[in-house]
Image 1 (cartoon, rainbow, N blue to C red):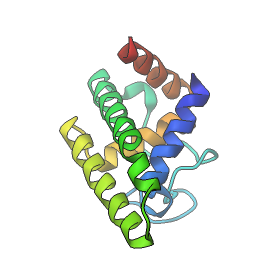
Image 2 (image 1 turned 30 degrees about the vertical axis):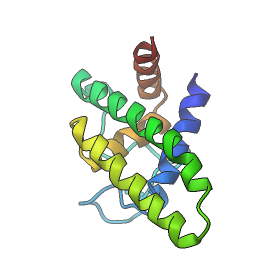
Image 3 (image 1 turned 90 degrees about the vertical axis):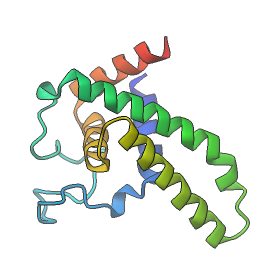
Image 4 (image 1 turned 120 degrees about the horizontal axis):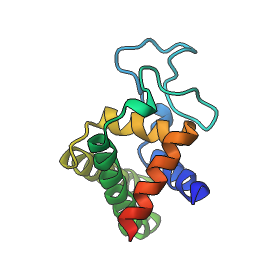
Length: 138
């Protein structure tokens, strides 16, 4: 299950253009404050996985499942784009819809991306997310 989560997280991150997004709005872009999460990135600054309330966890899992569903639903449309501009337009539409889903779940884009990154770099937090995902699927 854990490898599926990492794959799905990376899939979602690619659609959000995560490598180009500054994750820490108030932090300088230094080695101590990376501009993106990667598999080898350190834990996000200021986030302690054990202190994240269950309400935030539930909001994240809800948003995550909705975003994954959105991407799966629109994947064929994106792959079928005949021009680069059409592909970019579809990507922007998907991103806007994903952000709306995230905000509707009660998270900001920043919170979602931080939790997404934390799930990918902190094995304990990732397991908590995996458990909630399994419970949601049941």
